[in-house]
Length: 449
Image (cartoon, rainbow, N blue to C red; front, top):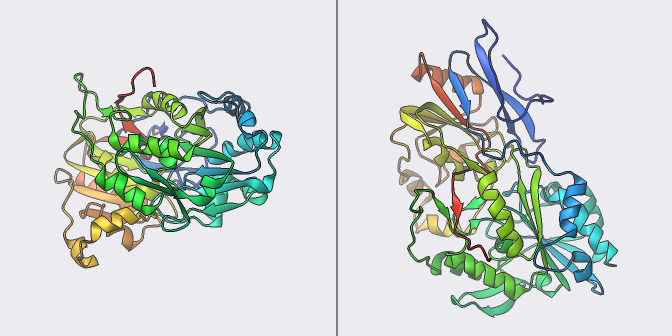
């Protein structure tokens, strides 16, 4: 049996090692263990099966080196340089996304801090604030993974509190009372650091989302999600291509208005590749920079769906913390009677608590009644298998997980289950980093914004 936990130098994520003559297996290299080594694992498949990997369009884009990242930090769009903004100021607050977002923030922080120091800001006056929205608060280990060891040793950080210590900034046009973290609001200079990933609410995460819901109070978060209703608009254009709505989107416009009320001075947006390395960094105005990054991401992350696959394999890297968001990939290109395999080799498993979701799940029912009420999601699939060596029973009970899911902790068992159901010619399609991929899409952003 091939060892699947070793790192293979020179082997990239999603590479298929075709079998040598007489070999019983071919292997596929997939990256796993985000935030815990980001290793490459080898996954064997029967040699006679036809395996294809559904890469995103930009999977060959080389990552930016430190000099290139610094160049982008020094040349923002839509605002002055950070050094100019911070000149003569005393205190800085920097909001950053949590571990549910694969953003390699630690690659950005040194360049931002260097500019603040050059402007005369003392290390102890640079405060990092977790922008986790309705997720759970972060611990020291998680913050160090996100910001880097040097940052947590030289600068203070605090957890945002969605219930208390909130400044009231008034009401948006949509009627949302904007309550934001007081410590962030009272800093002389306000910065956000975030990454882009397709998201059902704002089109792409990051940007203004770091303010609402990121560092907002639960009342504001709840209102934006539940009370602000989007006008009905086509999900696809006349050409049939799905639209990521970042402009004609009432909820996103509320996020933008909240960011303007807070007065964010400078923002950094990062688009990263399949290995969580930055390939595009855009700094500057929180809206303009985010729009520019999104225009790049919509092509970089776009992925052609598989067709007529007997087995669809979904690797949740690098966002296994919200594994429930990735099950839908299993139906993309699956033949009726096919098998879905979801891989989540993350030691923390599905760990993202969401207070807003918890409100929606409950309805006064018992835990067991909610579990029984789940509806089968993939009636066309012969089996749905979740593989993780770290699998816990609670994950299979998640309200968002398909109730037909079978959990296994051994890849050997996954292969046995697949071989029992699929004999002879078998087509396998793999989405190698489903946590950041999305289908072919376009934006609704006008040219002048």
